[in-house]
Image (cartoon, rainbow, N blue to C red):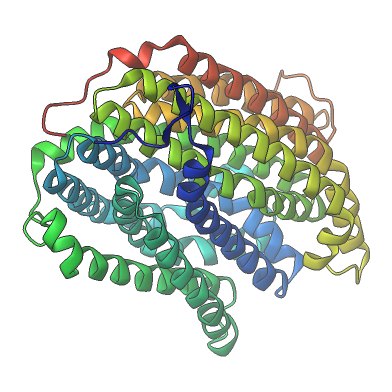
Length: 470
């Protein structure tokens, strides 16, 4: 197999073909930009309800995302296994990995149903305002009922990305986001379901995307090359191998996101304006980090294919190049968001009352640490994705877990709350509100990004070998 993104120059030496990387990553960046648009669309629709609705979304969004990401580890490993299978020319094994990811994703449905039922218990310790808590639960329950649909779609799009069919991944995401807009309008306003309607709109759009993905996998083209019509039966051994690789990735991203969820819940407790500002800035920064995840995903595929082809030196070179691209892209996007914040924030909270004007003022303030956070998040995404392509997931997961729970969360508590307002007695409290939380997030991203980069540069992933037949 020709090594991915490899170009031989006039001097006879191999170079990373940045044009090939760009061609591969562009549809993935567009795919994740579409996801950012989906998030912003949901935020805009919910903002039409009330400021309390935005605060409720801020309170529940990252808790919801954490649950989805932790369980989503069942699908994250699909891209790694598919890429390495393609690199070693085992195409039927690639489609089998996709189906295994889908079966594992559907198997999470009982857990999501339990989470839907336990929503009030999960939010009870945070003492949210009654109106905010009620709206948050209205969104939480139906969103959990449909979350397994999104995981199943991730598994199948991981297959397309792993084989290099990134335009197909983009098409599935495009159909999903286009369906989300009328679905939100229908469920939220035509059926008058409010916050619950936003969740049902997302569920309906994701169901459509899953049906499309299955239809493409079973189409004659993929049936002929990858024998996808013959490999759909569950393979317990392969599912367990994918879980061993994928669940640590889910834990890693989940630990990161849960820390952010707790930070947002802390900010929600300080007031609706600060919470609304934080939610809007989070959604704006997704314009940087979601496309960057597309670049990072290219690193997972290229590293996996190079390892499958038996060339770990090339895996190191291509992985390092993708990490640098992620960092540069997110740094540039962060500067653009910072420069345009004065015009962007009022789009989501029209300054019609004092609370809305206060939310805009807080948002403009926290954009500064948010910009720095984004740049170092680029190192994190790029390095973690390259490590995932090599099958190195356990140590990165433990690193993220330790930094999130023993550094970021305590620091957020210290910087956000005023004396007497915190959840835990005995910690120093600076009372900086939303700004304090964003400063803690910035510091955490710096340590996490540099830590993941150090793990990649150490080369310890070279000694990891996935099970034979992957």
